[in-house]
Amino acid sequence: MKQLGKHTIIYGLGYVLTRLIPFLLTPFYTNVFKATEKYGIIVLVFTDIAFMNVIYRYGIDSAFLRFFSKKDNIFSKSSVFSTAITSLIITGAVFSTIIFIFSDSIASVLPGLNGYGLFIKYASVILFLDTFIAIPLLYLRMKNRPVVFMTIMVTNVSINFISNIILIGFLKWGIEAAFISNIIASSFSFLVLIPLAIKNLTFNISTKLWKKMMRFGTPFIFSGIAIMILELIGRNMLEIYTDTATQGIFSSGYKLGIFMLVIVTAFKYAWQPFFLSKDKDPKAPELFSRILTVFTFVMVSIFLIISVFIHNIITLKIGSFTLLGENYWNAEPVVPVILASYIFLGFYINFQPPIFFTEKTWVFPFITGSAAILNIILNIILIQKFGMIGSAYSTLFSYLWMAGLTYFIVRRWYKIPYEWKKIFIIFLNGGLIVFIFYFFSVGNILLKILLICVYFTLNFGFKIVSYKNLLIFVKMKKIK
Image (cartoon, rainbow, N blue to C red; front, top):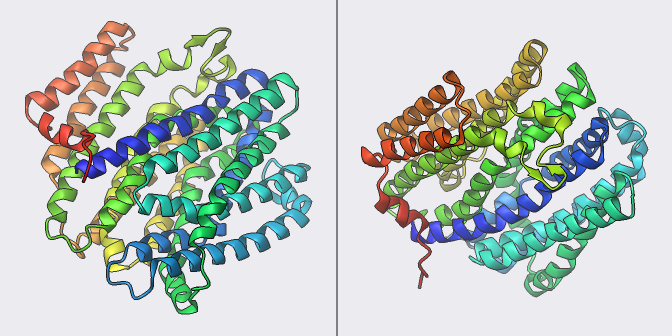
């Protein structure tokens, strides 16, 4: 737990910066581009890039994690690295060439992007660069080098941010500068990671290993697409059922979920190498159980703090700017719902070890696919009745379904004695604070602070979560 806590903190601090710096572009964009449609176009293109990243990697990245860490693997680590990166480079080059050539036709069929073929060309370049650096970055994680990993990531987003400020703020370029800045930043990571790739790349490329990796990783294609649909379809459906302006407002509120997503992603970065290293450890189930309890407490705590102070956060003035432009303040009700969604995304990530241990990755498409279908159905129903808040709740219910279904499937393969009573009480205490906050419309900052203190008192006072467990989880003690 010390090792996991140490790496989670390093990834967390780095990831705060990697998300905070781009997040600052949200107030920048929403204040500079007064027309919400322009921000909506930027969101749509980067949404499509996120979706295509799944296709470009087709599960090879997940297979790399498994085979690189496998203790009884007959293939060398150099063979795993070389096979994975070579496969991605070849297919990435092919995919990007096709997208670049047919960019105008592709733009014409994408919602809200007809006539923006140039942006699709930019996207094809970004996708290739990001695909190349995927395996070297995973290599750094598996070699337990979080500081190097996060340094590259933070520098990348810093370059992106500075480029946006210069090109848009000073040179007065249009929204195309958002994509050019991303290409500049991705090119930096590409150049920095080339030496690492060359150092580890050998001619020890195995077709037999590649077939095994494809068999393990292919389900992640469908699973990844389903996750992207689940994460992004609401924005596209808002575009269909409402307008680009509403989609832009919703997206700005959705981005505030970054506060929770930071914790989930930092945990995931540290969690995957950690649990893969515990494959044969008889004490692992008890350890995983304790981790989920502390994880739940941390996530619910962050949810409460942000939800209670969200109005103060988005209306905070920094000079003449606010965190969100005034035209986007209607996104406030969306934020707590999205924050809650990420709690259950975190549960889904916590429940994954049995799937990796048994290599029954075929279950991922079933779990995520059913959640994506549920999300689409709920969006169709709820957007028409409740607008963008309906889309937010569609996301929440879908992640809840995904986490619950994962637990009930994998518990037969690998027994983990989760502390469900404690977890339930943590949620109950959090729910009580939410009820008081909204029922009495608490607006005074001191009363808000008091509510948060009550939550911590309930959990620590009744020993639902102990200081000892929490300190073990976060203590940054050097592991020899």
